[in-house]
Image 1 (cartoon, rainbow, N blue to C red):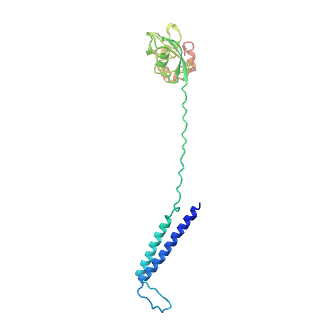
Image 2 (image 1 turned 180 degrees about the horizontal axis):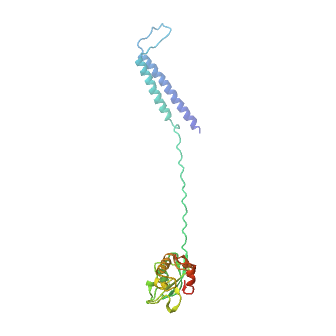
Image 3 (image 1 turned 60 degrees about the vertical axis):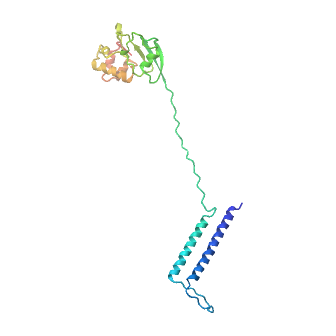
Length: 232
């Protein structure tokens, strides 16, 4: 098919028609504006226009030219092709959900089913006691920090009401000892005892006696004095 060539011919025909029309209109204007006509026997025929007539002719020619250009520009095939929109591609980051890790703790003391229990990371001591069947009727839950986050590998001891952590003359258990229990140890006064309990609640249990050195005011010398008197 030769559609582009036909369109070019059509546009050229339109231009030719407008040029002929423009020439005809200009000639007619000159004839109307002429005030006098010279004798026919004269060798030349001259047209004279006053200033007002010349301006009118110029305006008419300008209007014809503008209209002609508008017609040609609006001919088929003259419009520029529309730009094709390119869809934007956005890459959203893939969010990977990590599976919660498990922790294993030893629940001992006055619970229904003492032993090892598995918990999800972030579970509390209360969740560990529930996993062990719950407390017995004589369990003293006020001696246990139920809101503390359970730590992997720790032992959670649930004492009975009135039971001391060092009952029977055994070593003091750091995991459950109260401030009063700790004050009975050599070199541990009310201030250090309170710091030990606070550190245990905020940072988790002491996994060894040497972990006591993380408490401000306790050094290797004091830990040596507690050897045999305390257990994790």
